[in-house]
Amino acid sequence: MATIFMARSIIINWSAIEQFAQTTFFAALLDEGIIAFLFRGRDTYISAIFPQMLDHPLNFVFYLFGAGEFYFRQLSTAPLMLPADQATSFEMDFFDLFAAYGLIGTFFYCLIVGLVVKMSQLRRPPAEVILAVVCAVVHAFMAGHVLYSPQVTTILVLVLLAHAQPGSRPK
Image 1: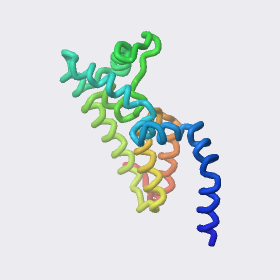
Image 2: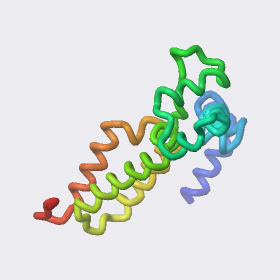
Image 3: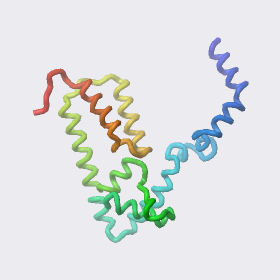
């Protein structure tokens, strides 16, 4: 009975719901599709910066060691028509990590994170904790300022500590 009432309420108020969606960030989902909604315009950064890295004479070095954050931000100025003081990154953490540090730097970053997780000697965390970490990683892939955020890393360390074996210490 409650489901029927809820469905009836949605149908009656559909124009108000649609108007609300059009005036919020959901407008991109309705107008431009799921890709535009998920990436929120960051796909423009990818299509502007990656070709610059591909066509650069040092592209092999960039892929191995990265271009450094300053230089790959400078690559965004010409295709995005930005002034030099407003150069941007991809605003997507995994792309930023790869562009700044390359394959080798990204490997070391993941290795360090893996070692920290291994040193915590985790018990089997509950499903909701696993879901939260997976959602954080997916969010970091699509959005910026997640992996580098002190708040996110502090929360992840607290989750690791909460699920670590009692009395375990790194050796």
